[in-house]
Length: 176
Image (cartoon, rainbow, N blue to C red; front, top):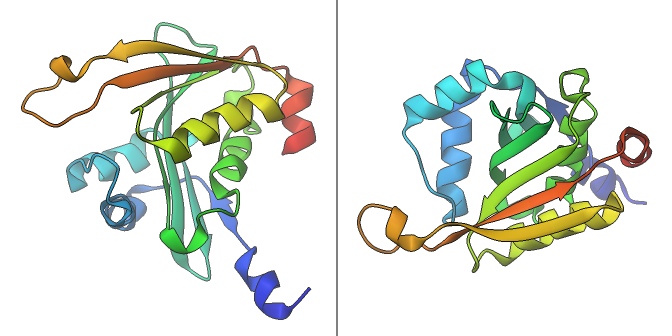
């Protein structure tokens, strides 16, 4: 293995804080496919939902981010709101690594299901969540959730609900 390869895979996973808000906003913006929310929302997200979100850095640069929260109506469910991976890191399994890092956190110890909404055309996210279910040897149910008519304005696709689980704790630790 070359030194360059060692550097490329040397990721630092951590909980975000408000100081990450601007870099996360830029990362989301650069994806070109995720809904870009206000910079204020990312500051708040990084501060308030840090236990269920993750920032990934490589060589001091923010290269990955997942925003998630424990669903208020189902406390055994981690809802993943956005997954962003810098273009330079795509195809290396970083999204899956971040999900396992989150699931291995003490704060997520009671999680039995992961949910996320995904647009039908978002093949990378579809593959991410279906792949997570395969790695955990569990189910991935996909159902209609939001229709394009639910969104104001024009141009937003339907959003499908992906529900992965049940998740057995020992399967998380094996992959983590």
